[in-house]
Image (cartoon, rainbow, N blue to C red; front, top):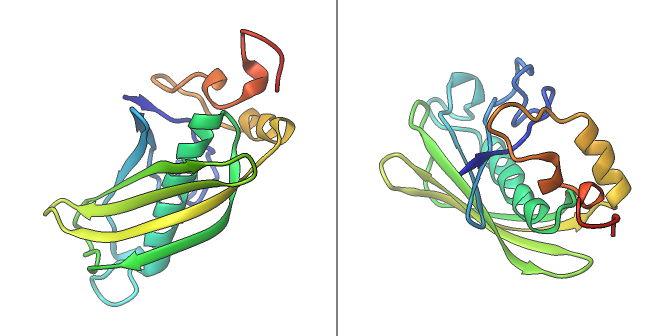
Length: 166
């Protein structure tokens, strides 16, 4: 298991964003995962996490999976979410994402959120457009690779020690 880098200003993973979720992503086998405990500032109805927070968590988690597989970052083309149960304020959530299809021009993923009580809160599928190697390198330049993180070579082709960028 390894941590993934983060961008300090990101709404989802930014540790310097006072309005953000401040999660940290991890990778294990072919899955990307994180945990998050919703609080009052991210609720819709009293005590229930806003659906947009659920969507943001799934989108970011699922978007990391093809980045690691293909060593290029991506942007969301389509996100489909099924909300199954409310995510309660104060109850820890586990978010997981993985690649389901790896096509040249579009990458497909799936993900789910479960709570600490074992309830399936939401599941999703996503389609992501890959960025170019140059665009990926631009993203890598502002990421924070702290102790315990995967190395930059894990997220970009241009840093491949075995040959030139593809």
